[in-house]
Length: 223
Length: 328
Image (cartoon, one colour):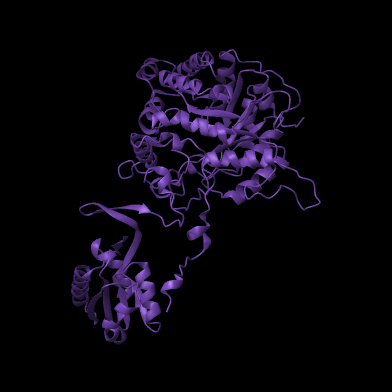
């Protein structure tokens, strides 16, 4: 999923300074699962804002809503009136959702309530960790199911750097496993260590971010 | 794959000739200044001149901004030092690196050491963006492609136009290896990949744990790698007991045996003891089959290199044909 964390309250309050009618719009998919921008988080943020406004004597009408996804046009229908009535919409979706909200309602001011982080997995209750960088050409199959582009801090494709110690990455030994230790262990367990001996050529990065903003067109799905 | 011989020199550098003739090579490190002060290079070069065959000019090591390695290398060359330019993959993509290699060669630089590069987190601009368009092994392969196939990484010939002559950079290609990084079993495989990619010489991370290094060299010999690449063992003289403990506790991939720490603790003249240990290490490393030279990384202590080289019986340095940095 796409993971995110809520922006600090002071930053959100600062962005909303001077706004009369605010709609806080949650998203029911990825950011609900990672507990950053779902219905519950919308309610908590709305309450905190109301309290702060009361304390500081600010006039602000705050409405709340959450839709299934902010990255699909059809789900916005149910909140069209609420969006139209608001001066500004604070989206608790990922960066995709915030932008798409702005595309669906081009006249409306939209603001991000979250900082979008990465494509990650829930590795344990309450912990999400990055697993994919969306490079556009998946090489995981060559590395025992572990992505060197994402799991190695330097995206090294031919083996670990000198900073791998006791299975940890020197960039942050407390929090980051050495991706190459993981690859080595998996390949060893699979009896495929010899596959790591070949020199991997320079990667074509143009299939991902470095080729400019990506677009997928599926002819059979076009109307 | 690379074997250095005097017939058909690849780059014609002094370092290449020393290695090809089978001399025990001596290289050192020359860190460029954290300023535009060219006098720093002249002073450091003065300590190294006549005592080493070539000197590594580091490339923003530990991700701290310093004078560019190519510029500092040219300044060192003017001071009579043959430079080994270090290039990391952290700050430049394949376009910038190939461009710099052309420029470096045009300026007379003939040795390049290919490195992955320390993560920017450790330097003085930790919020910067890194590049890592390629890794050090791919960098070695790219330089070998430029030199031997006379082509850029994209496949284009290295010529200014269709009618212009091909003028490729003839560079002696080096790589680094940390024999102490994890996973330990992968280190020799990684070295083998560097050899396959086209490395002519290897300089190792500084060695204190001689037993572990000897084990690494056994793995290297088992793969026959010492016959395909010239391996220069890295040493760093200890200045104090504190430095020894710091190296042991805080530098990833380094282990310093207690015996050295005890000696540094006990010694009345600690710098002298550090030099003594370093000289003993060099003598022991010379005895290991497959070690073709020594790489002295006297960090901000270049003035001690002469004493180390002389103490280890490696002075005077042999004079191969040609002048430093001048192509034959």
